[in-house]
Structures are given as C-alpha cells and as structure tokens.
Length: 253
Image 1 (cartoon, helix red, strand yellow):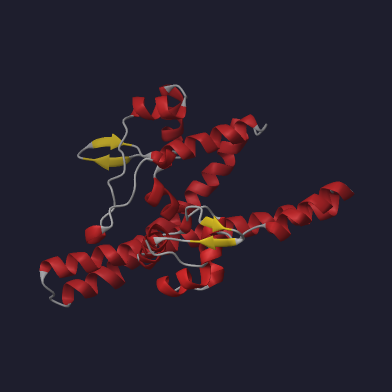
Image 2 (cartoon, one colour):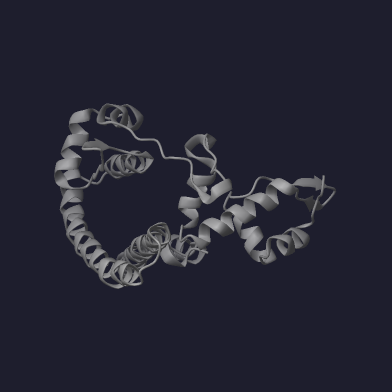
C-alpha cells in the first residue's frame, strides 16, 4: 500500500502542505500512521482530500463538508461515484423532539415564531439534523442564562433580515441565472444540471456571507464593550479569544 509524507500527499492531491495540515487540525482527515517522528499517509487520506476538494468546488463550507463526509456520529459517508450525496435523514416532529430531547410543544412554539423552519416534502413537514442542531443551540443559550423571551426578540430581528436576504437572493437567482439558462435553449437535462449547480453556489454564498457579517459584527461590538467596561482579566481573555479565532463564515478556508 502506497504511503506518503505530508508534502508528497499534498502534491498528489494538488494542495498546499499548509492546507492539508489545516484539514487535519480541523478533524477532516483521519490520523496518519507515525514512523518515529515522521507522519505517513495512505490512499484513504488522498481519497478524503479529493472528496473535500470536490465538495468545496461544489460550493460547500468546511462545516457542511465535515457533516457530509462523516455524518452525525460518524455514521454516513458521502457516495463518491456519480457525484451524489447520501440522502440526508428526514425526521417528523416526534422524531425531532426525541432527537433534540425536548417536548413537541416547544418545537411547535419555535416553528410558530419562525425560528424553526421545516422542509416541505410531498406536502408534509420534515426536519433534518440541521433542525436538531438549531434546537440544541437555542437550548444551550437558554441554559447559559439568556432569557427565552429576550432571545426571541433578537431572533425576530434576525428572521426579518434573513427573510429580506433570502427573497433578494432568490430574485437574483431567477433573473440572472435561470432566465439566461432557459434562453440558451440547452438540452433539458444539461439546463437542469447547470441550474442546480448554480443554485448550490448561490445558496452557499448567501448563507456564508450572512454568517460572516453577523459573526464579525458581533465580535467587534462585544470586543468594544469589553474594552470599555471589562475588567483586566476579561479584556486579556477576550483578546486571546479574538487572536486565536479561526476565520469565520465565508472566510473559512
């Protein structure tokens, strides 16, 4: 079985050594075998790097790629052949409640507020692991001491802003992507394939830019308040947090 040093692996995958090491640090690569102080990588590492590169080319963030490659709990792996992804699990409300460990009534409340948004699959509401994570995030904030009512006031503002971004991006997609494709008189399957690929990129760009701006603005606002009002220990701790953070949102490499 072929084995590679990190520079050889990077060359085989067409990536820089720093990028390969970054993927390993972020948990996207399995651990290498060590021979003394030398790390050795095999074919599965090369295949994983090619999968990551392919998924990035399709417009996915590293956070999404990590989920697609390993699944939640390491269960599902991406189907490599044919460029398709293993279908994400679809949950009903009861299954979501069981997975998130909350009563269904709370989920209905979050859905009524607009914070939880199910997919519409064949006239039925369905949820995914993204909904599980969203519910857990809300619960973690409440558990950290943030009152639910105050959090919902902030969330409503975010929901309104997200709705405007989504509507604007959807309009741009229909006007400047779909319409020219339709007018190009391509074979139906080619037109549809291009449409879906372009939609993935538009979806990725819109969501990543929103995440990037919210994270960067919040970071700057809180940093300013800590510098103005915080104790010396708080200021030092927050400076270390800022200095040690990985790039957010659309800047994640």
